[in-house]
Image (cartoon, rainbow, N blue to C red):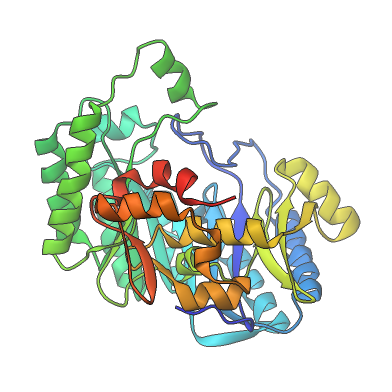
Amino acid sequence: MPVSPENLALYIHWPFCLSKCPYCDFNSHVRDQIDHDLWATALLRELDHYRALSGPRIITSVFFGGGTPSLMSPDTVARLLNQIARNWSVSENVEITLEANPTSVEAEKFAGFAAAGVNRLSLGIQALNDPDLKALGREHSVKEARAAIDLSQKYFKRASFDLIYARMGQTLADWESELQQALDMSQGHLSLYQLTIERGTAFYQAHEKGRIILPSEDVSADMYDLTQQICAAHNIPAYEVSNHAALGEESRHNLTYWTYGDYAGIGPGAHGRLTMDGELYALTQDRSPEKWLKNVTANGHATDQRESLTIQTKAEEMIMMGLRLNAGLEKENFKNRIGQKLENFIDHNYLQRLLELDYMEMDGHHLRATAQGMPLLNGLLGRILAG
């Protein structure tokens, strides 16, 4: 998927949730009252601001993330998509994804979201048994999850859902059974994440006090290997570290991130990589919902960081993102985006060692992690970069 300077992806962040999940370190917040019309107006203003910065582009994907975007009204989603169409050209095969929770209240909005223009739904299922859903702080039941999956496939051309594995008390047999159930319900895309304990979350504090016991590293590694084997056997192999898809069902929006294309982030805490006057900028919005709303109301945007990226930083980011893909990092795409060869930014001695250990492989077109190297990728990345 080569990067085109004409293309632009849009991420729209809705920061509110009904409750804060104990494992979540995303920029999400619980509020008793939300003025939806005020928020819609502010998001529209920030879209206008980014149109002024980006100039005319072709929108290839829009992603409503959060938080819980399914708490938005379908009318708000329609207003935002209409404004996007007014501000930019929109690709004929644009992918418009909305993240949703599978509670029955939110599922009732699926028809409205589809009518507004959403054509891909991403459901936060996380587990397929009620005790684990409760332990994860989820608001839905397995019954609601299954109903929401069925409903998503009725209203949307493309649908995906997320599961978390290596959970507290989970065995390899437990995960195999749950994954088989998920595959039976899948429409061609699954996001499968190992549970990680993030600093600043409720789970982190509980884990530090010994109240949460996760599967051992060996069991977690076995779960990862099993996931790759079973999904590949069902013809939805991994195309990225945690994402699996049938051919053609890959998330086009996320591929923009992983291939280092341009994208703009709208809403509290959203970030982007946007080319302006030949320079690539990193842009970040205020994280606090209240501060973001205040600044957008006053200034038309709430960008709190705007940094022109150096060649070294761009190269490092593109390498780190591209190696997450099973297809790997495309050398020609890298040279076109960065202006220099990939080899100029790689520690050749360390790379040679990784090649000999069968953790990496490289040919004339790609550098990629092997099946053995992919689970170790985070540790390998810090050493493979030269400089």
